[in-house]
Length: 157
Image (cartoon, rainbow, N blue to C red; front, side, top):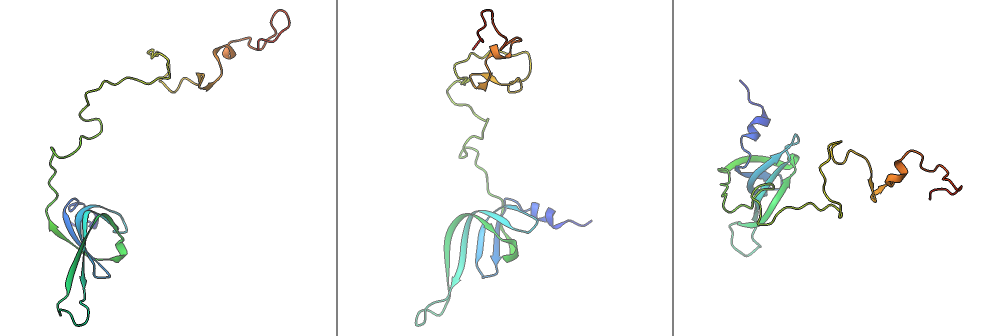
């Protein structure tokens, strides 16, 4: 049984990965996403690069490190990807509540432009047509006979 490259990559989502690119820089971060071009996204990423010493200084090369955060690496520039560590531990007490999760101390109230909320038995809200005062014609305009001459010969408007 063969495992596709896609499944191999999916198995490593959220792992701490080390990525080496063509210009010999190394990126270490949490592997969050990839696409068909092998572009990858690393979170909490750090860039490591070897810096040659200036003439007359030490003979060994130094490693320079800088914090980048969220990074998108282009797939055609990647040379190698390897696992550095296990997935990031999720501490539920440190995270903010997700949308729709824990409610606050307040109470929800609809904001309806001063019109009372009356349960509608007809069409679903938003499907019954224009509303008076919000771009739609007034109720009198929708009645039969609107615009017909009134007794006395004056138009109704």
